[in-house]
Every structure is written in C-alpha cells, then in structure tokens.
Length: 174
Image (cartoon, rainbow, N blue to C red; front, side, top):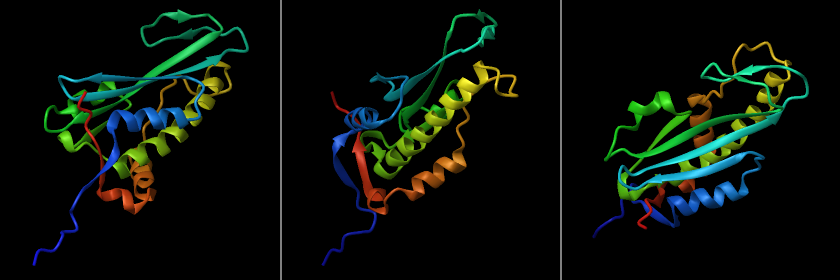
C-alpha cells in the first residue's frame, strides 16, 4: 500500500505570468508596473516606477548626478524572479530591490507568491509616501531608496495560508 508523502506538490491553475498579471491588476498602486520575461535565462522582472509631484522649488539629483528640476519625480526599481536551476540570481542582487528564486519548471511556490504581493503592496504604499516627503523636503534623509526587509518579507510569507505551501505557479511555457 502506497501512502502519499507530505511533500506532494500541487500545481495551481495559473502559471507564474498569469499569477503576476492577476496580482498586478489587484494591486492598489498609482505608478507603473511592467513584467519583463527573459525566456532564455528563465527570469522574470517586476519593474515598477513610483511617480510623485513636487510642491515646491527643490532640485533633486538622480543617481547619475543629474539635476531634475521638473515637478514630476520618478523612482524605478525591480524585483527579479529567477530559475535557480538555470542562473544564480543572487549574483545580480545589487541591481534589484529583491531577488527571489523559483524551482525550474515547477515554478514559484504559491505561499511565497502570496507573500510577495502582500509585502509589495505595503512596500509601495510606504515608498510613495516616503518619496513624496523626500522630494518636498519633509524628510531628513539625504537620499531616497526603497528598502526590502527580508525579515518582514519572510514573516509576510509565513502569514500566507498554509494551504499554499505545497502549491506552485508553474513556469510559463509560451
């Protein structure tokens, strides 16, 4: 008699790209978010832009040292999801807000996916508020940067339903 192991994985009906698109549609965010899929390296970027308007005359210097004196200020960042059997995404960690591995064609663990979007909503809300305060000289910070707190992220993943722990959004085939 064969018993099913506790480690059985269940594929959910959506693949990773469909999951990302559905979650992005539900995200309450006034900025822009794009999905960039690199099929060859099996990597997906969620690239987002925060946009705020300055209310006073204040010159803001970008990361290249250029002064931006327009009323509209944008901040761009991205999260990299990578197939850990194909590339070492952690090598690129300095270029991303966060790097999150997934398991080859099996895809992204559904509990991790839920945690990403729950945390991302809070991070973007806080980021928009902090960026607005920064460009309107209401902050003591010398520079603005979003900070991904892995401890908070892991706690957010743990808060997602335990039912999701054995489910995966498969890697997209098309």
